[in-house]
Each structure stands twice: as structure tokens, then as C-alpha cells.
Amino acid sequence: MGDATKSRAGREDSYDIETSVMSPLTRSIAVRCHYLALAWVVGSVGAAALAQSPPKPRLAAPYVATPESVLHEMLVLAQVGPVDLGSGDGRLVISAVAQYHARGGFGVEIDPALVKLANENARKVGVADRVHFDEKDLFTADVREATVVTVYLLPSAMERLERKLAAELQPGTRVVVEDYPFPTWQPEKILDVETIDKLKISGQTLTQLFLYRVPTRK
Image 1: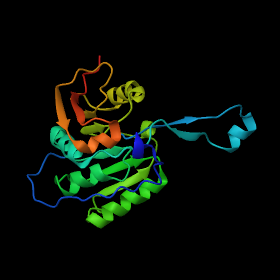
Image 2: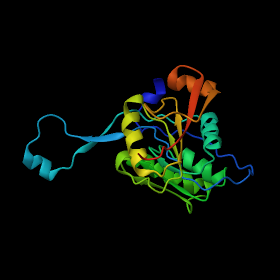
Image 3: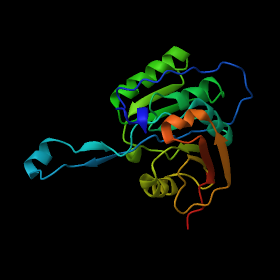
Image 4: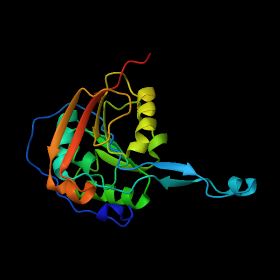
């Protein structure tokens, strides 16, 4: 995946937030997931060692920043403003608040260097009073108050994420997924986005966005 395989902490993609005035959109919480971290223990570790040291998180995918052209399509499709899981440099949450007039949002990111970068980016754009980023694991983060979720994860993570969102989100909550759909949910809408910005990430220009509604619990 070229540049996308660089370490998360070593990647500080630059970006600009447009400042043009747009129509206010509904309050929402978006959850974009660039990668996930699962706690694991490598090799054979004694009980005493486990008691002394907590399991270390494992990255299951590299940090891949969603291109600006795709990011805006996701926000428009979701009618959104955000909580972002796997928030990277914070671009989605910051754009939603600064450009799309979301009331506020926060991001969850496992990499402390990226958490620091995202909070700095929020301060630079002037939305630090409405946007905050915390160092947390995607699958332990509380998303029960989210009204909109956006997701960019590898296929291997989608089944687990589907279960988490189904258990925690209210039925009818909007979920926008980039490229890799959920295994069982049926999308309400599919949007094809062509952009050369995606070439360096996936080797192709097509991005597919899937709009879901969290189904009623049985």
C-alpha cells in the first residue's frame, strides 16, 4: 500500500480545512475507523509477568488517511458531525465541525503521537473548544451516544465491529462504511466515488461508500 504502510506515529499528513459557509447539518457523532487494536500477548508469558504488565495493543491495519475528496462525500452521505474511532490526525472530526457546522465531536485513537497531532490540528483550526481526541482502543470505546458512525476498517474487522455497533447503538443510527461492507447488514444506499487520491492507498481510483441503518434488535 505504499506510503500507507508507514508507522502511524511517523505519518503527519498535511491537510486544509475549507472555511466556506455551508448549511448546518444535524448533530451527529461519526465514527471513522482507520485501524483497530486488539490486546494480545506474544509468545509464552508467565502468570507473574502478566500480573506486572498489561497486554500490549496490536495494530491490525496501518494508518491510512481518508482522502479529502472521499471524506467530504462521507460527511454529506451521513449528514454528519462526529465521534471518530481510529481518528488518526483528526481530519474527519475537525472537518465536520469546522466546515459542516457540527456542534462538536471527539476522536478515539490508539496511537498517542496521533492523538497529540489531532488535538494540535484542532487548535490550529480553532475548534479545540468543540473537538477533543483521546487515547483509547476502538473496541473498548463507548459509542452508545453516537447518532452517526463512519467506518474505514479492513474486512477482517468488520464482523466484530458490526456486533459492537448492533449491541451499543440505537436502532436507526446511520453508519457510513468506506470500501469494505459489513458481512450481514444490508446497505440503504451505495455511492461510488472516483478520485485519483485513492490510487496511492488502494491502487485504484474507485471508493465505495455504504450507508446503513442499525437494525432493530431481535
